[in-house]
Structures are given as structure tokens and as C-alpha cells.
Length: 259
Image (cartoon, rainbow, N blue to C red; front, top):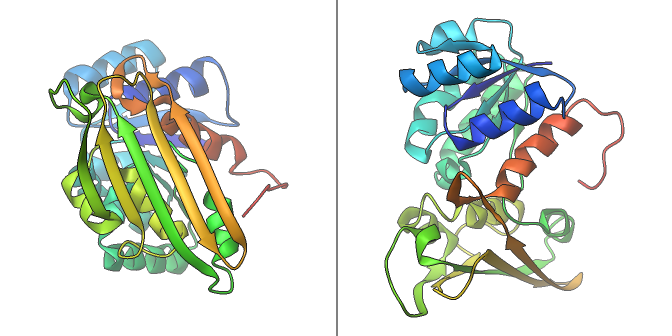
């Protein structure tokens, strides 16, 4: 498997370390696309892959799987072209699919071109339970409570406070860099308008905490995840990067666990 990455930041660096240096997936990252020439050149010198600033040139190469690792705004510009070039796509910035029409458009394009779109679980778990619970329409409620440090949220405060209490749709709009987990929960479960989200800033926490509560005909679920931040960027959970690596590791396996 020849892998390409869109982005030259911390997630790209982490994946290059794990895949190319530590050989933690059945493949190799052979190309990186980005607009930051200095960062891209640095990655090229360290890892020996190709670096491209032209998207068409990047996509016209021998890569068969593309990992998107940029911002939500940037992802909006690039994802459709990846699928038009008949590449499998792994999306990191899941907030780009707040517009469900865009998700439907890309899904139809992938079906037409015989490719696949993968949405990693990111910094949370329990997605398999939600998908199973909604199989016959029996998922009734999903609530996400996220507790983060001021640094992780990019704000300054010395007291605990609720920053947001509403739907996943509005949470992704107000916190696009921090609350992708809300959207992937909504996609797996009952949608952006029914999924409830509460965001709390807490100066006393060292790790981001996500509490997921769901209820339906299947019963009840409560799941809490405490995330270690990436060393290079405290705004990103290590588990988010690991979830992308897991997709790469399991992509071609004959045995699949869960949904």
C-alpha cells in the first residue's frame, strides 16, 4: 500500500515515524502534499518521501490511499479531488462533514469510483455500540460531555466553566478544531441535531476527558475516555493519531472486528 498524506503538521510527522520508521502498517508513506514548503522539505529530508505543493501532481502518483491531516477549512478544498482521482480516503478533520450534503456527495462519488472513505474513531470509543444500537432505529439518545484544559481549548481562564451546552451541529460550528468527536458520534448514531454536547473548560485537568452516554432499546451505555495529548501539540489527543494508524493497519485485513 502506497500512502499519501495531505498536511505537514504533527499528525503527518507522527504517521511518518510510525509507518516509515517503525513499520507499524503494511505499506509506506511515499508522498506528502502541503503548502508549508519549509515543513514539507524538512519531512522529505528526514523520511525520504516525495513532497508536493501541487495537488494534482500529488494525486497523479502511485499512491492508493490518502490520509487527510489538515484543518477543517483546508479539508473542504481537497477531499473531493482525492476521490475523483480514485484514491481511498482517510479523513482526520471529520468536522468537514457538518454539512451532511457534502458527506452524501463524497459517499456517492466513492461508490461510483469504487473507492472507500474511512472515518477514524478519533479521541473516543463506543462507535460500534452506537451503530449496532441504531440498526433497527432503536437508539434514542446520545450525550457527549467533554472536559478540557484551557490550553487544549486555546483559551485563558483560572476557573471551571461550561462553555457550550447544545447540539453536535452547533458544537462543531463553534469549536471546529476541538470537537470533531461530537460529529463522528453523530454520524455513527442519531445525527447532528439529536446528539447533545456539553463542553467544559477545567484548569485542573491534565487530560482531555470525554464521557459518552447513550440509551435505547438495547439498554444503556456509559463510556469515559481520558486522553493523553500529543507531545508536540497538546490540542490534539494521541488517540486521534492512533486511530488513523489503526485504520492503516487494519485496512487490508481479511478479519474485521466490530462494525
